[in-house]
Length: 398
Ligand SMILES: [Zn+2]
Image 1: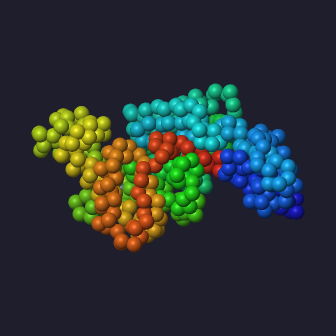
Image 2: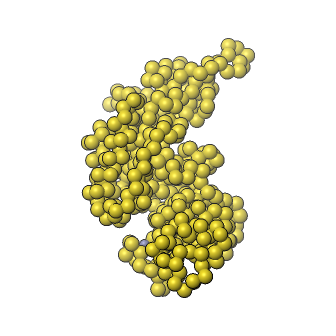
């Protein structure tokens, strides 16, 4: 028992030192000791172990504070490579990511045509990971997976991902067996929020943030006090299925009517455009409904087409209502938007803000910033990989 406790303390101290060095471009042993409140000799022992592991190295000499000039340490960012996988609804993307969130190679595969074929979707996951892990120039330290739908992170289970037709799929177990690496799976919006928190340049200082991913589906990742908030069941942030149209709402893929996704997602926008085009022969949108895609809507929107404009800004108004509710409940002042719909740019963002002003209490809104994320299409990949970069025990040899 005593031995176990000592081992635990050792690990705790080591993680503390690593976290501190990770948090700085360069830092001396003395400064690390000051921040961690560990003794200098403890820090020195841990540092020499981490240097042996290849995780950190001495990179220069700092300013003298009177005595000898201190030697500076930094993370060897390419000493460990992680794999991040984004199982988005129209395309699977995976990348090798280094410890500083730099992407070292991406593989993307479109998922058209496998709709609702769970076995085919799983094969694609293997195909994409085989490609990234097969290249063994540098061993991988872990696989992080951001998946749409309901995910049980603790059990490594995809509880329900409608588009992929996965129900209670033990994805973590399957991937661990196949690749012999630690695997962590989480909801894609939660992953994107962790990505922005860890690697988004402006967001590292924000202890609280809500990331909203608006693509074919809609979901949120909520960070509170620097940590992802999963909720009691792990399903926090499922704002896509908050009902916003009480009567006569469209049927949602979840089986209810009038969910936010039925009026504000990319899928809803395309559907509405296809249904409206018959009544608007003057519109610049293609007259054949089947030719209407997100790209053609974007083209018409940017050319000032009134129909495209009305349809797009309508999605923003609904989003504004739900974001107002989030702000009302949580009073989190940083709202970050990501996903395919951000292509509609400033007018869309302004319409969201406008709607929030209409539906929010004045005071909580005053200091609330709503903006686009900085990581774009890589947010989920980076967040899924960051789970390992933030969990230092996976980086150390045993
Ligand atoms: Zn729904």
